[in-house]
Length: 464
Image (cartoon, rainbow, N blue to C red; front, side, top):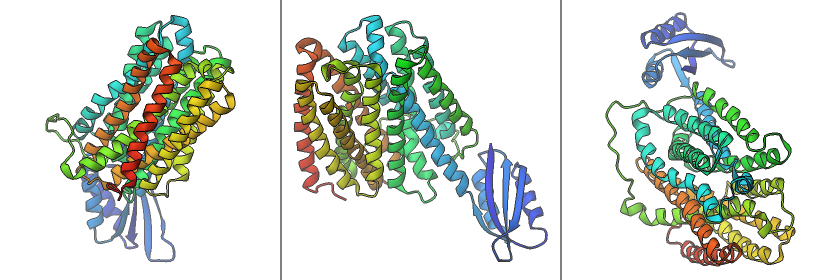
């Protein structure tokens, strides 16, 4: 791969020869050199683009810094590029995963499956994510995170291809499995990798950027597929083609990404992640907050767009996509707006808004008012953003470097249990008592759980 290194050196004869000799001895081929005087000093800044093995990159940087003529070695630009590339790949993966959301009504009309089948297909990817996160977080150290990221983006593309060519429920299930694998891979390592790549290893900023990238991808996916599904030719294929092209761009960018950790040759010993006693209570509070937050959000991503007629008399594919994009877009915007707030404060704000949103959701079911549906969508989005991002930032902040990957992996396991189990349960109970009554009782139960969790947070037992 190509590495770009900025080196500040004393302006002495022979410096460039020493640098070139070191690159050659470390097996690097210099592709491009740019040098110029550094400000008004007797120093020269040399930017070198070189190709070579990733295994020897860290030792090359150390040896460059040890040269007597070298004042400073900077790879911050490549770190920033790699940091934002991981965020982009995470965004594109989640975008692909949520493309089907507004289209489920078309699939249901085409193949006539029940609400239970629909919620199962929606939640299936989350069930696949769980073992994938646990496995990949450990194997990434052996394989190298860049290879793992490449595999994740590739599987995301396979998922879109599967949906585009599907000719029945079995095809949708297979495509959803590919999407689950891709999301599990990206979520398993994205936060910890981005934290390592951040120029200052800022734990809170890395977690917030990862959360925003994921939520932004979630929002753009249904917006694209909703409008293209209604107004573009080939409604069940066109949006997936867009995603394939975007994801392929991310795959191309991975070629130039910095591999922070050198892959190990020893065989990985897979084990179930665990939480030590000192982190157990904070982890429980953070992960349960994410569980509840996404358990509510999933209702807006699966049942609402597919059964829009239960919520309003104004039903269309583009409106479904817009509502899904709105709830996720508002979630992303609110995360950005509250990024300077403490994680604790973000969680409290998010919980209060979620409770209000669920109350208006029940009102919407009775009135079928488009106004109340939009208000509900906005409130739940405003509540999901800070409660999810705040809980992830809180956990990332209290984690040690040794425990971060472990705790983050388990956090996403609980999060995806919140995405999957409540929705599958709601779908099958809806076949029994009716979907409207099931959603009403689901809202009441979620409000009760949020109030209990809110009391725990306010008591300050996990306050940082």
